Image (cartoon, rainbow, N blue to C red; front, side):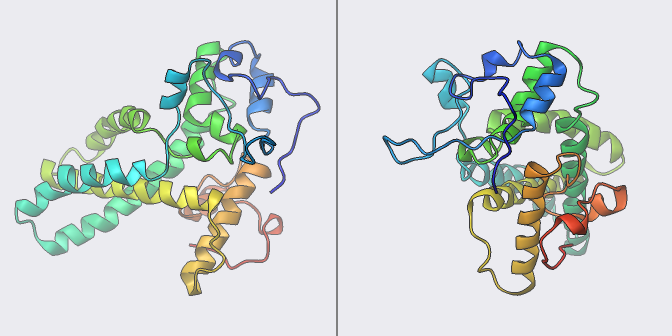
Amino acid sequence: PVAKRPASEAADMFAPLLAQIPGMDQKTYLEWVHTPFDFPTDPKTGKVRLARLFKWDFCEMFSHTVWWVVPLVWVPVATLGLCSWAVMNGRDPALLAMLTVGGILLWWVIEYSLHRFIFHMDENLPNHPVARTIHFLLHGVHHKVPMDRFRLVMPPVLLSVLALSVYPVVRAIFFAMPLDLFHYLFGVALLGYVGYDVFHYSFHFLSVESLPGFIGDSVLYLKHYHLKHHYDNHHLGYGITTVTFDRFLGTEIPASRMPKLKKAA
């Protein structure tokens, strides 16, 4: 996709970005952050330039996350740290199968809710430099530079903060569930997050056109659907791994805006 450029950039894209966010007013920031910018290829190296957040190299290093860190860190946490407890307690396999389905559904609810109501709380974002900075770090940077491969998946430290914030909310909802079963449910949801981030990375950087059959059609549709969210209308298309919630909650990208592809679930 071709990135849209505003008439004038509110920030110098070739300088550290984070220090420039507090100086923007609210309206300028929201317009700027949702106008995608694709860096040109560096003529010296032949590689696409990357956005820089910090002036200091040490801090900048920790702002980069390669995609494979997500499964490397979170698959063991989800399986050994959470799901294994119920398995070792000898819980009924049929019950665990039901909880597996429930965990997937739970992830879809979290995925849509976080993306729509937290990451895109644009109209409700407090008009304060600190709020804009947090918004930028959580999700804004990805919308500004959607093709920056090192700022596409969430750093483990940042996800840990989010997970620890979500955990007590979900636990309060399932307060009557035995703790080992709740951890199994939450662990499956965490595996759903891993799948989400791997799919998300593939939508931006991998060719999925050669995938066969229904799976290939679905993944290709979701890829185009997500890129429309970035490059066409960021107020629609909050689902990443499913469009179901968008359809039921009125935020689906219209078919007229999509290429002629088979619809995904």
